[in-house]
Image (cartoon, rainbow, N blue to C red):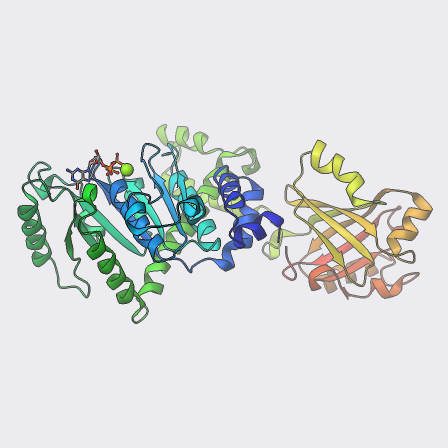
Length: 464
Ligand SMILES: Nc1nc2c(ncn2[C@@H]2O[C@H](COP(=O)(O)OP(=O)(O)OP(=O)(O)O)[C@@H](O)[C@H]2O)c(=O)[nH]1
Ligand SMILES: [Mg+2]
């Protein structure tokens, strides 16, 4: 695990902010941090707060922050609206006598800009929530304006959704955006100091009574956020909903829907990106649009063509038809750190990890490059193959590794071609030994290959 992920899990707010930025930029490094922290997530309660613009969502969140802080909790807030003003829960600060200096540490607030591109918003939000969750923030509040579909989709992924309404909005619940009322676990009628709050409440009650009977009927709460009225009752209602979710398998079922939506979205985005990229053999998405418009192909056949093409491309560890795939180039170096300048800093490859391969006598720096990777190999002892290679030939490419589906079948082919696989020096290593992370590997001696040591690694095991 990287240092930054460690620091996030340890609760360091600076590391948390940095990790969220990396994730938001969609960098490979951000993805790795998310992968590292993922096992530490799923602990925080997620509270979504949505409603029409200006309903008082941020004011309510501020009061909720103050209340949860008074219970000694470290909180997180994701606001999908850069204009939202948060005080970090300081509104009640004087009244409940919180230590003011602890303010920044105990409330972590992150604003997300609404993105134009599809999926960008909810992806960035979920990532930020995960990082806060791993950092021990609980609960995490998510504020979105309940206008666009994106915003509604984001907030429905929370465990408990508060829909904040105000009296006098077109005087009618018909005027409220479709889909907003359906996602409410709790209704909050804020600005109940204004007239019409009772009427709105009875309209909502009427609507709920008309709907089918459900296990959880969303309670309707009245608040005046500017005065902090009704906040205590609101937190009690949130707690009640949390208890309801904990009964049976309800929380798990709800979160299953959320992970499913997230997973589908990532897959869809990746597939679309691949379609639009050169990787897809020039079969760009736009080219299909043209052909569809010109009635040269129908949408079903087009979809089948595209999927066939993606499916037939060799992928690491892909299906039986995939054939061998270049897995990595092993480069012998005296000191990994001296060569990172070139591979990481100049070439711009990502340093995924540096690991000690016990039994092989090497430290290996893993730098993914496309579907394959460069492995910088530094000897850890004098009597190791890499050390001997350095002595004889100096630094340079030490071996080329291919991933094969069936190692035994591949070795059989090499032997049948009269190539030396398990014979000669270092025969022990040529046995199917357990390589890095326990995958089965074998080596073909450079004598029989024109000077290149070939490593074969069996797919499907010890995959990175
Ligand atoms: N009278 C009254 N005003 C309120 C109440 N709650 C909030 N306001 C005011 O309503 C305005 C909007 O409040 P915000 O908390 O920013 O509302 P919001 O829903 O976060 O707004 P957006 O994020 O811009 O959609 C502010 O001027 C608040 O002072 C309330 O209960 N009564
Ligand atoms: Mg707001």
